[in-house]
Amino acid sequence: MTKPVVSATTLVTEDGVPIDAIHLPGTGDLAIVVAHGFTLSWQRPNVWRIANRFNQMAGVLTFDFRGHGRSGGLSTLGDREIRDIDVVVAWARQLGYKRVAAVGFSMGASIVLRHAGLVGGLDAVVSVSGPGQWYYRGTEPMRRVHFAVEHRIGRFVTKRWLKTRISPEGWKLVPVPPAEAAAQISPVPLLIVHGDKDHYFPPEHARQLYMAAREPKELWLIPGMGHAESACGQPLVDRIGRWIDQATAGAGRSAVARDEVGAPSPDDARAQTPNAAA
Image (cartoon, rainbow, N blue to C red; front, side, top):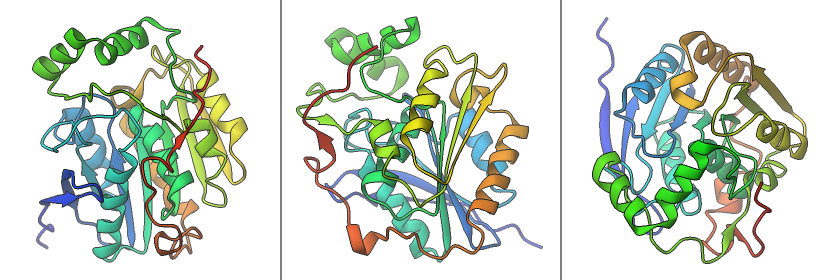
């Protein structure tokens, strides 16, 4: 039997940003959207490895966030990126998938949480190594990230060597924090996965997300696990895939449907007051 052909396309968000996306066809009605972390793209080895592993049990759609890889625009580190997720989820529905889940890693986790809480349209949500709040500087890796974002030379280095283009404007209005968005995801099932050796975001971030969220929710604190895609081995990918399949069993369209809510404007998706920095 011939394996279905993988196809790539360019999607366009509501605010006109071209998003480079790829579809790995599945044989059933379940699609998993894979949302990568900061400075990555769907072509990076760990993202591609995870996408192919999920593809053994579902159709997979993955893509480059704005400002990353072959997508256009500039990275806003979790603000306008909910529109990138939105257009990929819409593509999954257009392809005929009845069950659509999203798995986000690190920055991608915060975006998946914010999309699920503020926009809707998913049947299950998974956050892997995601932050619970903005402006966290409690670890050395996160202090380096803040330097890359907040200083011109940092943005230059990130663009030149990491192929990631960051908006110099920052957040004119502070986006709704991940934990606040997580509180709005119910009744869609939510899984929070975090390592106890995460060198970017300590496990307290996962607990913050879990405590804010409403049922149905699960928290997996993985002993010895580090951060995001590089720390997510095949057994964990398989376990997450099984959870998604079970969590979406019998699901049709999400209780919070796209045509009932619609994509938010940038102002709708932001809060006026920043979350306290750690």
